[in-house]
Image 1 (cartoon, rainbow, N blue to C red):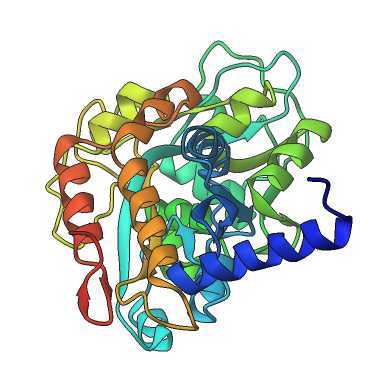
Image 2 (cartoon, rainbow, N blue to C red):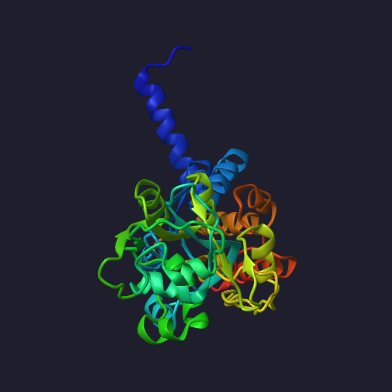
Length: 353
């Protein structure tokens, strides 16, 4: 029997209404989870969420707007989850108005990327890093840099330090490290997702913004997640750790820095590690979400879909971590994350059974 377009359209509407009547919403395949935040892990999330969509037909739209922006969007309840490289502060947790959970997804290195002729691999001390970004070291051939790099001909080139202009977890990791390793930085600059940078330091948005500026500007130096330096084929330096060794940022040295006990809420710092082989500007990055998922008209199926994505991210999704130069979660960190996800609720009842 041949049906008219009107009849087919009417039957389609009837089918959709039946589906809504039985489930309260459209099928999960039409669902798109929303996330926003840190650019530090954005290359990894792009890969992970694309792989998840191919396997489970669930779209995940993640926008890299910086950790501060992601936290604000979660507090406003405009996203299902957010990404941050800095654990939420007490003030931010209070602003959320309900318990927010954190799970780490990987570890990464914040590296000093720079643009110099010949792209030499340089060594940096906490004192030189602080001096560069506080504006007291302005030339690449400064004696303090030269003393850490014997045998390397440093150019008489003016430095162009570049920092994150947006609220950034990468900035938090970077400034937390410097505050631990250098008293002058601790007293004058402090720690935060944003700080009062000195005149002459140039702001750029996101890890991509800093990487792009450094790549195009001779004499520039900035701090970015390791993969951004590798992808842009930029030189990046070794950093002197607490043990007095100049450490190259790598999967191995980041993993060494993560050899710490993980608390139940996963709020742990890896900067300025005691590990002799650990890279000192390392950090976790987290996905954050509300513990109670029944808010803003969210369906239970949507909440469960989010929980399953989170479980996959700390489980099978970890296979995507190392190929993108991030360090995977330890068994302890993954186990803590699974327990946290298992504590999610809907109307006060466990979301996953």
